[in-house]
Image (tube, rainbow, N blue to C red; front, side):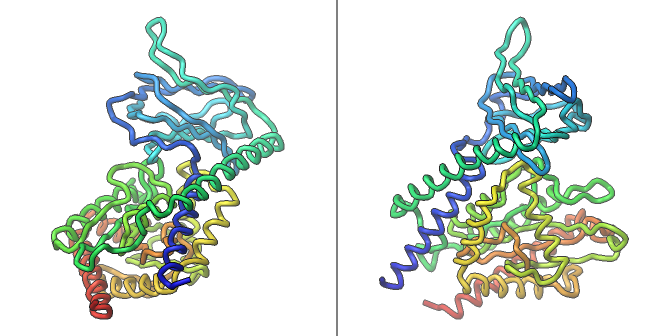
Length: 425
């Protein structure tokens, strides 16, 4: 087989694996983004006891919905399409019966997600939309009953087998249809604009790290990411895309897939860390991470584990089989891609020095799920620490964000200049 044919085959194989892994997260439910005016969730109610509990969502209009249960910890995940949230303040903080509390927010592409935290394994006895009647608006009514762990796990395994079969079928179908797909990472013309994908971490139902003053990581990194996007676009040299353009949660593997589908030349994930305990006030400064199967140190390993848990916080199911797919992606990752990621990370740290505080060991590596695109050079930048008052002050500053965004843009320019010099044709 010719080298170019092997390369094409490799790309289609990875594309099929990526799509199959996404199908495992939510097979068969591809909804368009919610239209804000379609329906409004105005209220929620809980009733019942430790044996049977009812959860009600009051709507202005009937909508599509999907519901499932997850274990460790036990949760009930409800997805509603075409809904705008307008719930009274404080909803979800207090529980009742089997539900200890609940949270909600946008999760793309499914719409609005409500996650019920339950204190025992439960079975969804009934779930339906009650139509408007006798002056009462439509309502989503979910009836939960307590069950035992053995029955719960047995049901989970049965459902998982169904989802895995659907994912494999989707992967085979995608592989067969591969000639019609765009080639990820391939450029049509050397003169075309470089494609940069910026990934503001967390969002929607997942706030990320919190400062003592209540500042949310998801808001800080979104503000910085939009400023960086605007800075790069002004150069006229790049096409710049954000993985999220609003306060919504995007599953981690979908963020990776966005970069690949857009043929990204560079993927930059933006975060702000937090350190618990007594050392929280002592740790400050920016850090840049690249992908590695072996973490550079225990702190990097802990951070990757925390960031990778975002999907769990947002109610995304991660079956054990999904880990096998992730491992395949790591095994297939090109050495060149990893080297390019490290090269950009070093340029980034050099550019940040003098513009903001940088940690002594500024470049680290770990198994961040969001960096696992096999053909897109990717880095994760931690702008600072939400647990450090001095860093929080910097993160709040528009002038600081502008200066640091300029430093990141300079590093991007240096990265592509170096690549062009090495490959002039």
